[in-house]
Amino acid sequence: MNRRIVSSLLGYLTLFCGAAMIPPFILAATSEEFKGASAFLLSIFLCLAVTFELERFGGLHGKDKVGTREGIAITGLGWLLISVLGLVPYFAGGYLNLLDSFVESVSGFSGTGATVIEDVEILPRSILLWRSMSNWVGGLGIIVIFMAIMPQFGRGGMFILKAETTGPTKERQMPRIRDNAKALFGVYVTLTVFCAISYFLCGLQPFVAINHAMTTIATGGYGVYNGTVSEYGNAYLEYCMAFFMIVSSGSFAMYVLTFRRGIGEIFNNTEFRTYLLIVLVTTIVVAVDLIWEMHMPSELATRSAIFHVASLSSTTGFVAHDFDTYPPLSKAFLTMTMFLGGCAGSTAGGLKVSRIVLLFKFIVKIVKEKSHPNLISQVKLSGRVIDEDIVYRAAKFFFAVVILDIAFATMMMFDGIDFVNAISVSVSTVASVGPGFGIEGATSTYSLLPDFSKFCACGVMFLSRLEIFTVLALLSPSFWQKSKNW
Image (cartoon, rainbow, N blue to C red):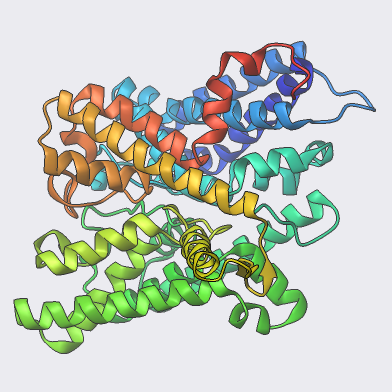
C-alpha cells in the first residue's frame, strides 16, 4: 500500500473538515458566543495542524493512482479521523465530556442521529449548526462530497467510492468519477434547498428550517429542540417532512438518471417501488392499529403512521409523537421497517431494500430449479440480470448485520442492560436510526447507556455506516502487510 498517497489525501480531508467548521465559527462570533467561537477556532487550527503533518509525510506525484487497498484505507481512516476532529467543538467548549463528545460526533457523521445530550435547547446555535452539518456531510458521504469539490480524488477515485457508497452494487452514472460525484452532490444540494424552503413555508424560522432540512435529506435526524418535530404541532410540517424523508430514502443515483433520462427511471426502479410498497402497507397497518387499539382520530392516526413509518424506514429518527407508547403490532412493523432501511445509494441506513429483493428472488430461483432441474433461471433487478456473486455478497452482508446485532446486544447485556432494551438499542444503532424502543425510546437519549456500551455503540455506528466489511478489512493484520493479493 502506498502510505504516501493515503497520508496526502487524508490531509486534504482534514483540511475540508476545518473548512466545514468555518460557518459555525462565523455564527458563534457574530452571535457573541465567545465560548463556542473559541472552541471552533481551536478546532480549525487543530485541523490545519493535522493537515500540515499529513502533507509533510505524504504527497501526490503525476503517475500516482489509488488502488483498492488505498481506497479502503482512505475511506476507513478518513471517517475515523473526521469523527475524532469533529468531537473537538463539543469537548473544547465544555458542552460534553470526551467520550460523550466522541459519541455525538460519530453519531452525527454516521447519520445515526442518536444523541447523548439530554437538553439540546441549552446549546448555542453554533453547536446546533455543527451537529446538523455533521449529519449533512456524513449523509451523502464525506468522500463523495469532497470528491465533488476537490480534483485530487480523481486519481483512482472509483476504489474510494466503492468503499464508501452503500448497497450491493456500486454503479456510476457518468464516465468520469468526479463528474459522477458532482452529479450526486448537485442532487443532494438541490433537495436540501427545496426541503429548507418547504419547511420555511410550513412556518419554521429560517435557522430551524435550514438545520432540519440538512438532517432530513441526510436522514440523520438531529433537531434543535428536545421533542424534535413534536414541539411544533404542525400537521402540514409533518406531512412535508414525511415526503422528504421518503424521497431521501431513494437512490440518489436514480435521481441523477431521472434528471438525464426522464421520470421513467423512478417508475422502472424495482427497489424504489418495493420500498414505497413497504411504506404503504406498513402505514396502513399502523394507522388501523392506532385507530383500533388506541382509539385515535383517523386523521391523527394516519398522519402519525405515515410520519413514523417514513422516519424509521428512512432511518432518520424524527419523532412527532411518542411511538414507544404504540401497541405491540405497530411496534413490530416499525421495527421491521427500521431493520430494512431505505434504498441502496440513498442516505438511509438499514439493510437496504435491494438486498431483501435480491435474496427473495434468489430463493424463488432455487425453488424453481429444484422443481424443474432442467430450468435455468436468472435473478433480475429493474430489468437487469444480476450476477450471482452480487447475490452472495448480499447474503453475506445480511449475515454480518445479524451477527453485529447479536454481538452488540450481548455486549450491552454484559454491561447491565436487560435483554429487551439491549435488542432495541442494537437494532436501532446497527440500522443507523437513533431512537428506538425502551431505554432509548422516542423521548430518550444514549445518555442512559453505560460508558462501555457508549464506546461499543461508536464502533457499531462506524461499522454500519461503512457497511461492515470496509472496516473489517482495515482491521485485518494482512491488510497492512505487503501482499500480491491486493
